[in-house]
Image (cartoon, rainbow, N blue to C red; front, side):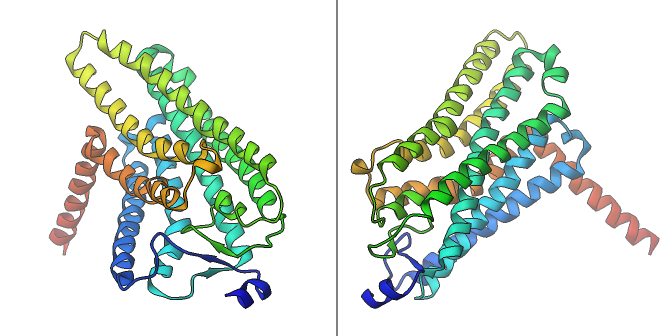
Length: 318
């Protein structure tokens, strides 16, 4: 290992668990989760695209969330699954940089997008007459483009810094992907300035959006409580509870990991928490939005009915 560290620029990812005879089992488990996440998010995008009833700002934002999650899990899981199956756990310097860049870009874009989705529900329920103006197609596009641009800028800054510093210690990263804070423990120099920028980025991309989401849903729940229509109240509660479930699964582990000082963090705990926002959330999002959303279920029924009708017509014609 010493020779390897001195002569190679590659990093080594220790992975979620130490090497063991259960590698094939973990590979199958992670691969199944990956397939569920890819199929679920791709199907959600396709369903929103095909069903005209879902061509609304809310579902346009939801399709973007699915697109981000689809790319998010594809950035992390393939290499992670590969490491469970094969003894070579190395990742090239460039490969590590690319993975880190996409992880930070997609993560930052998703935090902002979830905030915009909460704002969308706030305007729809609390200011319904202003909804067509405040949440127009143009505004939706600006929200999405803004999320991607801000996520990319943040990612460029952090990735550039992390890959310009010298690494004079071991090249072994105690994580299952190229997480920049985990990499900085290997740096030769004092990184307190960078740790401060990480803290500020976490406040901007996690804490402030979470406060915005909490304020939006606080107003929404207050408005729903005073609704006279039982049907409208149930629909609003259903939509809000779905989104709050997604937000909790994503924000809480992320914020708990990155807001703590390095002295209070352990690699084992960081890896366990990272499973939530890198693997479980992209898998669960399409499941939560489909099972707890009557409009999505209705769109699925219409799609199945249309498919069956086309198939029946083809058989009759034949």
